Image 1 (cartoon, rainbow, N blue to C red):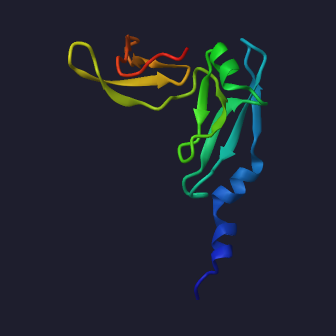
Image 2 (image 1 turned 90 degrees about the vertical axis):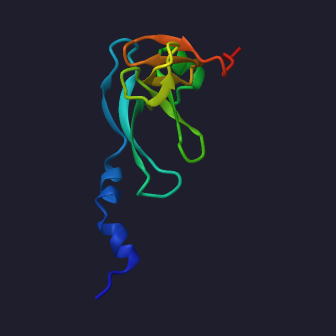
Amino acid sequence: MALHAADDEERDPRRQQDACLPLTLGNDARNGKAIEVSYHCSDVCPNQGGILVRYAGNISEEECCKHDGYPRHDFAFGGYLGCAPPETPRPVFNFRRPDGTMGLATRSPCKPSEVRFEDGTVVIDPNIRPKR
């Protein structure tokens, strides 16, 4: 006997888990802002959805950068999802160091021309102009 597609969706644990979110974890001692875990999915749901740790409330990208946060954007459509605390993991990519070796690095939307390697070294990407 085949299951109906609606039955599959109701039995999917991801559908049940997102009903518990957003969930407040506590407050950031540095700025007093509440930190929450929320569920987000915009394109292929729920398979490509996921949880996001961010500051609760409506925090603009500009304010996020002032608090050393990490503005998070939707991978599918690019929309702003909120401000993640600075300790949250960031997307990592390979980037060529000035000495020619490759290394894993991150880039912040707040300072897109800066490339920060895992060892703390920061270089300026000559192909990206800093925001004005």
